[in-house]
Length: 515
Image (cartoon, rainbow, N blue to C red; front, side):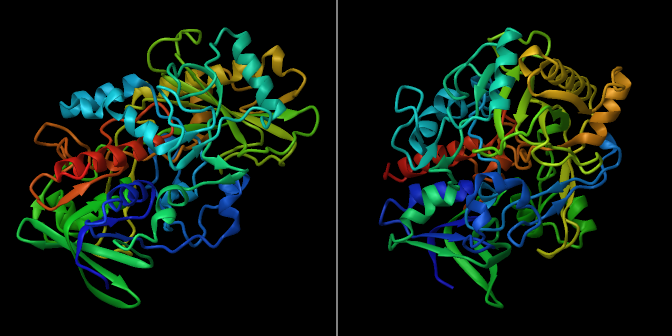
């Protein structure tokens, strides 16, 4: 393999692509990127409407959770991208930074304003090209297109948005311009009707830089250590295993793969490592802990009076963020979210509904308090991980999930949707009291694909990484991905992950005199 590198990035997903783009801009820095998958060759990836069908294909790690007591013992698929572009090749393309208050918790946890909304705003702006043009809050010339749709919106979604406005919910225009509570179409990472992955935006355009090397089809088994210093990784490519050395190693493999890599390297909770047959080199109890995720109740499905036109976007066209107690309240972070999908969306436990005959209002909790954990089950990369998100394990999450579903049904029963609504299919008119609503949610809830927190950043000694994202107890290695997020943002995490990577790269370049 090629090497040694000044900086070695593990993972060519969202964070890794941004890191490669920023750090290789300095021709004096030799940058390597390792990716287990290859370049996309499935044409469905680029078609926004195809995203729900991409799970369990060859480029999906296809993780599974343990049976979840909070969701009627169900095992949930957790798709994660094994491909250049990572999970940005699989996700639903919604671009939502989150509410500014979300990042106050990050600043408090780290004691650093770098992780506040204002601290991250330059990175949000630098990474994006907003279709509405550049201003104080939006970037206009970044690599990632952020398209705010208008005429492409489904007529069903327009009626849903009108129902929110009639209810007194504020119209905010778009989700990244200030207030988050209210009605807006989804901003999407789409250009000319096609998905733009993080690799499409950031990595692929700079692969011709002579100081940047991308190694695809390369499996990273463990970190290479010299005492407490990480000097690279032990990786397998084309059937050969060897050490790829680096002066600095950046783990950007995501909230699942990054903690698993650390644990396979002997770094993590000693009791878990011992049970998995791995010698513990550094006992870090919180690696793999603090796992949390957004869920959506899939869903509040309505049979339509007439055929529902196929989505010209990606089916889920509008998120409505609300205060559970006062849906008309505009200030502060939201507590629940609704989403209108111009298609039937159900969990595997519910009777499927034919496409084109129905639409769905999803509902969920923006700031879940349930916390789970993940761990290795063996020393090898192919040993399946133990993933336990502890879904709906707190009273808060159960109460908010019920309230979110009640609000979804309130919007769904509105006069503004009457021209589309024939009847409610799920949960159905017999499901009304709190007990039956919760029972339905347990059968219907699915992941929103936002796992975070398994290598949380903080200023306290128990945190996995410090405010500069150094792994405590080690040198030469930092974590730069969704696993460092201490508490989840209000909405989809992808925009925040891009900003984390850009913010880190900016600081790193500045510290070595290259910013």
